[in-house]
Length: 403
View 1 (spheres, one colour):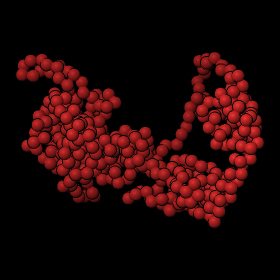
View 2 (cartoon, one colour):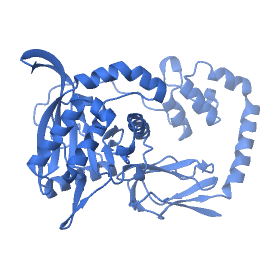
View 3 (cartoon, one colour):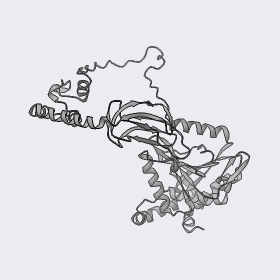
View 4 (cartoon, one colour):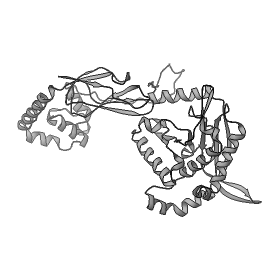
């Protein structure tokens, strides 16, 4: 019986995806719930698993194809599962009985990866011609044997590299790869933000002496009690929330000819993931403790690293914080995360000489950047917002006491 492989539901507001790649090829036998393919959306990667055990008889949606929820991706013949199991069992028994001693002897000295390949494919190493050092088998030898016994050609000697005598031909020593769905979406949204918003950036700097002193004094106790480290982001998130309460225009968005003021504080935290920049959202950040914020950030970072973020993790958000300082950035002008009208850019902490009460002292300083949509946020409001954040971070006890 033929069983269809369909595109699974991908979460709220996501209807299309790109087939990032198939893990199996036509003719392969698969187990129920075994990974078959990966889908890439503009937000997350999704796995497609086998609905039943059987033989993958047809791939309909090839790698790179755009698919929608419910579309047919391929077909499995589940009637072939039982027959395949019997055939595999007979093959193993026949191979084992044929030449166990010779097979074991030939397997000596193989690299672990090669030994695993010949074992999984029931290949007698003595039947494969080796092209490695001292005649040893390589993975290429085994693959060539499986594909028909062709012996891989020896690699030609490398020619000396010489400077080109004339301009390079188009495409010479270049590689063209299609943009991923996530990268295309990032490009489109950032360009839309530039084309739509009246975007400006204002700057300030903050002395983080008191924040760093608090972290140094309490970080061990904090970690022991809450099981998570005390980072800078919880201080900045708290400071942003308090500033948003006083400057509500930065916690809003434009919809047509209306302004929507949001009476909640869902703060997006930009996180670098293997597939690109993603912005998971900390819901109701105003109601969370420092530990709650740090735990949320740690959970999202782990999910982003493993490409496990779900669409609901990144939907919504009323304001965004991005930290280029972790990569060493000293100054930047962050681009709005539409339809939001404000984004705060953090940067590297650098010790600089500062004049404090008439004396020059070395202080840990950070430049702050606020990009905002001038259509609904005035310059006075933007500057005041940054000053509020600066004041809160230079007296962090106020954040902890909520005063």
